Every structure is written in C-alpha cells, then in structure tokens.
Picture 1 (spheres, rainbow, N blue to C red):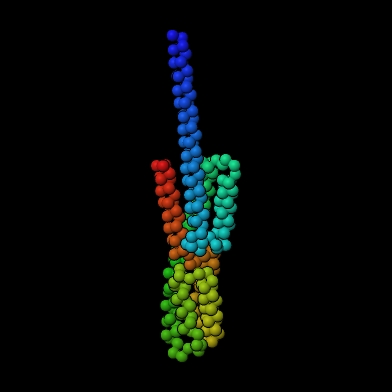
Picture 2: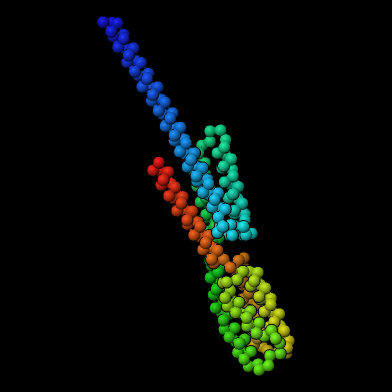
Length: 248
C-alpha cells in the first residue's frame, strides 16, 4: 500500500514538474513573441517618422532657414532614440512612448508655425486688394499722358500688377519687382518733374511693402497646404498602425 502511494506521489510530482516546465517554456516563448512584436512595432514607427522627414512636400518647408532648427532637433531626437534601441535589452515600450512624444512635439511646432504663416498670407492678400486702386490710378495717369516721356511707364503698371497678385510671388521676386517699380517710378517722376498723385502712390506702396517684409515667406500657401496634408496623412498612418498593433 505504501509502495503504491509512493509511486502515485512520484507520478503526481513528475506530472506537476512537466506541467510547470511546459508553463515556464510557454511564458518564455510568449514573452519572446511579445518582445518581437514590440520591437517590430517600434522599428515600424521609427521608420515612418524618419521617412516623413524625407518626403518632398516636407523637405521643401523644413530645409528653409525658418524650420531647419526644428527639423534638426527632431532628427537628432530620432537618432538618439534609435541608438538606445541598439543597446543591450532595450525597453522598446519606453522608446516607443518617447517616439510618440517627440513626434507630437514636432507636429505641434509645425502646426503652430503653419497658423502663423496662414495669417501672414491672409494679411498680405488683404494688402494686395488695397493696392488695386493704385494700379487703376496709374493707368489713368498713363492714359492722360498722350506721349509718355519714358519707355518704362508701361512697366510701372506691370510691376504694380505683380503686387495685386502678391500671394503668387516669393519674397525675392516681390522685392525685385518692388525695386524695379521704384526705379521706373522715379524715372517717370524725374521726367514729369512733378506728379503728386504718383508720388503718393509710391509712398503708399513703400509702406505696404515695408509691412510685407515683416513676414519671412510669401509664396507659401500651396507649400503649407501640402505640409498640412502630409502631417494629416502621417497622423492617419500612425493611428492605423496603432489600431493594427493593438489588434495583434
């Protein structure tokens, strides 16, 4: 009887040992799979953020002087996080959280600048509407002058037309056109000896362009729309990736 009980106890002990060992192996395998999934999710997210910086629509904006500091700081953060992921036994969950935090900060900074630029564009476009009457005034002056004394009088109208469409020009082209306009206007004034109407136009334009120069960029409406679309697309991709990750 005792032998039977002993054998039974040994059998139970062996079965329990096997069960514990199998359970331990299962836990280890599960943990390894979890670590692999977390690792893959981290690498996928890091790649998305790195590729975002390389996009053409993003690069056109981020390579400019106003944004290079933001871009460089963000790129450095990504490099630091990537370096930490190469260390022994990295905490991928922590690093993934760091990625999300840095990306959110980067996006917030860009969107903040985006709103500033939009306001600048709106103000400049409002200014261009104010300039339209001056274009008409110059046309009237030219029509009254039967024999213009300077060949570049028509150019004055053309240059002023540029300002009416100010939203379509870069800072450089606006400045070049403005300087050309001033030169033409001065030549006209000198030829006419006196023309208070055109002088007033010149003074008003000088003030408007001085206001315009306080903004760093003019021809940005399309570019910033592309940037905003890129940011929104990136956010959708990230949200979809998070959902997919949670489902896995």
